[in-house]
Image (cartoon, rainbow, N blue to C red; front, side, top):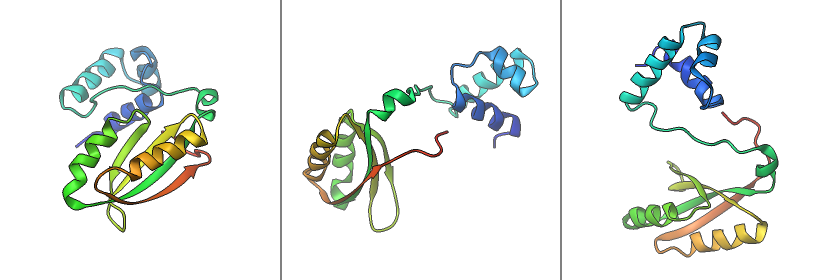
Length: 142
């Protein structure tokens, strides 16, 4: 179980994973040593497993993003996941309950590239059906 202090630290790291320990300590009202110790403990426990990159809105505005919902033959799920993992345009992949089995978030440089990507995903062996929704804007991104 995480303490409220750990959750607060994680929230700040989600905002800016490159924030200095001094900045994090100031915002949390604790010492730098405390922040460093908490980060090391969270990493050692496997709660923090890595740090990411957030792209500038100007760059992201040039990308076309979509959610692609997939129905997959049960015995083909592992193969489909492996093929999706190999595609650089795949940002996230979720297993879900309901009428679809997976939701894939993808990004492409253009609508035509997105169209080709969705066709490629739909043609994968084991993918039975797709449904795509283009992301128009992101209102919350933590």
